[in-house]
Image (cartoon, rainbow, N blue to C red; front, side, top):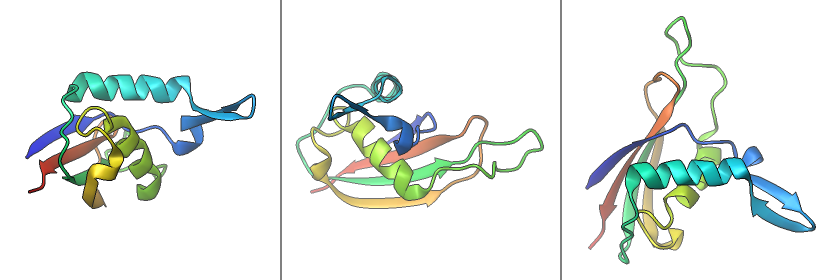
Length: 118
């Protein structure tokens, strides 16, 4: 099992852009993917995987979780897309997902644990 701490994901509302009747990933989405690949590396497996993901809200100046936090389902699609090509070749290899909120941290983030299934 491998564990990674990733930056706070962008919203799906900012992830996709429509350009000339085509939906494409935004520049912000491509930058997020680049950061994730830099932190995780590019070593995809061909086997099914199980993911455990914790979304850490941003910590406010008074030491509490920010009231502005992504919904878990919003975070999930962005995370799965960003990890594609890094941990697994295609997100259809993800056969099990555990998703929850974690403790708030400075700037927010994601803890992702990936386990290759047998």
